[in-house]
Amino acid sequence: MPNQQLELTRQASVSESIQIRTATSRDLACLPVIEKAAAKLFPPGRIPNPETTYPKELLEKSLSKELLFVAEISNEVVGFCTSTEIASYLHLDELSVHPDFGQRGIGRALTIRVLEESSLRRFVGVTLTTFSDLRWNAPFYRKLGFVDLSPTHLPRHVQAILEQEQAEGLLHRVGMVYSNGPDQQSQR
Image 1 (cartoon, rainbow, N blue to C red):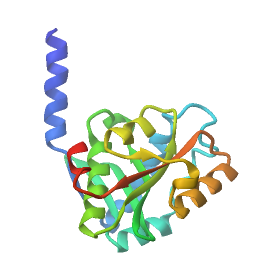
Image 2: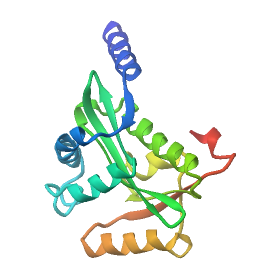
Image 3: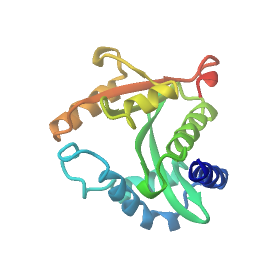
Image 4: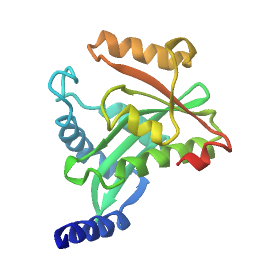
């Protein structure tokens, strides 16, 4: 019991020091390291090439539009997410948290930052594609208010992304949508 209390106290103090901020160009160098470490959590074969990371030029584009966010603990970047503007949505392209800092609410905080940005910019909502069967994927996003839609009801850009992912060998994928509106705020 005392060890459990110590662990809870340690987690609480760490979570209090998490800072989510807009990325700077200085952050770009550490993002592939985080992404590769996070990719190791996936079952073998689920990610066709786990050494491939989100392209630097796309990270720079998100950075220029202030759509690249990082999570920091004690001045160390431990997670990030990047989004793009597509039609009337923000599309969450990538969310990665270094496994050494997992299970502390960092992924949730980064996702909420994207939801807030979508609302501030008056987008219809946020879209994403993710694995349907991994607990830290679709079930995680559902808890934040995202809903699965059948492919025919998804926005066209999500349908196209799912088709591209399937062509690249990604299986068990689902498109999800978070709609900005007054009823969604209470779900976070």
